[in-house]
Image (cartoon, rainbow, N blue to C red; front, side):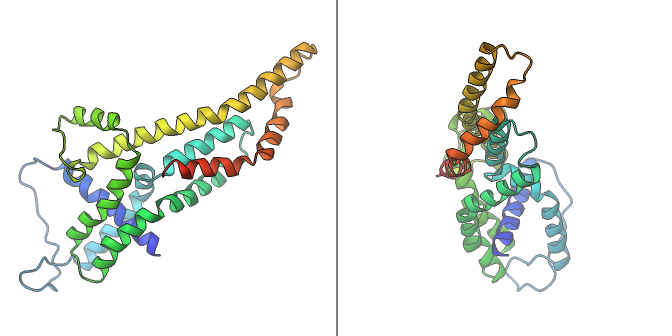
Length: 253
């Protein structure tokens, strides 16, 4: 439950900050009161219970997309898909198994970040020590640090240039509307690099099997049918899943 609460707060952080970036510079807008009347004078009023439920339902509806955008899930699931394609096992493991493994590995990789969000923002907010706005600001810090660690400066410059913004002085000044897409393309680039390395040994097996079949004159026999058991045997002998998972987790450190 604690990790779920942290993940929900992360989603709320992104919704608030991305929404704030999208409306920056707009004209006068309709303002809704979030006060339920229980606050004390001079303090920021708490969010009404009804709006809290509405916010929670909104976060839950977009949580899958947010998990794809700001966590390690994209890199992990792409690399696992490359492994399956390289083995030529069609739908083995099934999509549900790959996605489930990717989610579990994402929870493992993101655990320190979500723990920091919980300690710095979620717990103080639930204890009444922080307002909702302060909790959102505090919770965005660990998530921003994680994404910046995995994002190439070249990709940040690309989106910053397209957004026509000045070079930020600190990490906190970098808007999420620039950081999130830069993080995504950096993750895809890294995933494709790892996929290429994974593909090479299986490609060599395919080439060897095809050459042997051609030399024996067995041109009508599909090489993929013969190479499949050899690729599976090679993958099992080198403890492939252990190597892939270890490489994926290590790539985030």
